[in-house]
Image (cartoon, rainbow, N blue to C red; front, side, top):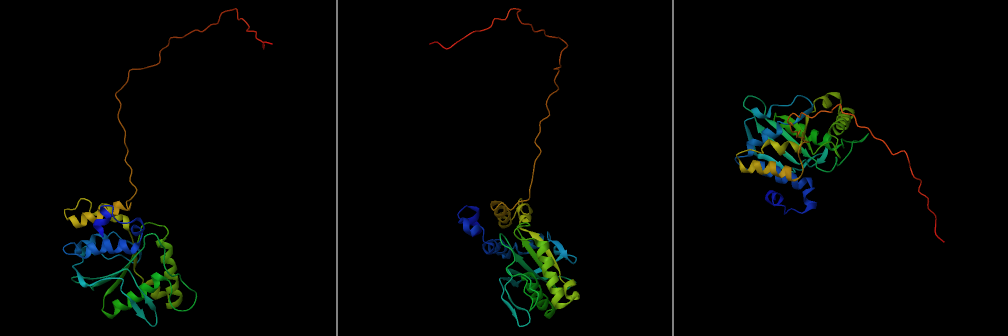
Length: 252
């Protein structure tokens, strides 16, 4: 699928599907030996809530804990299907349980509600991730991956999720939320000159989709010094004293 995109063979309607993009990019990351290099991408995430872990210091990604669209269900929380779940071992700390919710040209699938169980997509996925991490004595971390700030507004989406968790589960539960924002655009230059062909393909794919940061180049030329200058010579203009009036008429 990634090769089809790079060669311009992928139909236009498929390019804009976030599931296809997620499968292409994170499927490429899942293969050896590129699997550990995904940590460089995750490390580009900016924390919205909590202090971000240093993904660069993580040790090993568990293959068995690298899942696409896991289906999680719980009687208290309901069901959800996040895009990617990754388990990461760390040498002297708890393992990391990372959930990635990816958006491309769409917003969240379910908004917050005033009553009933947790309904906001990010809030629901966070509650499932937190429960799963607590069972395995792991540290949960959610990454909200979007193209930019539209149609998804990461900060607004998080604030709504935070408020619903606070209203329905208490302030401490809301303060425990660890969410970072990451842009697809970070891929375009991260591996652009990498010696690993698979990683370079990932950066090339991002550029094929226009997922690049705004860049500008100042192009200017230093001109040689000119000796031109305005002179002091004055020019005089005059008209002859006799100006003849032109007379005309329509002929009969």
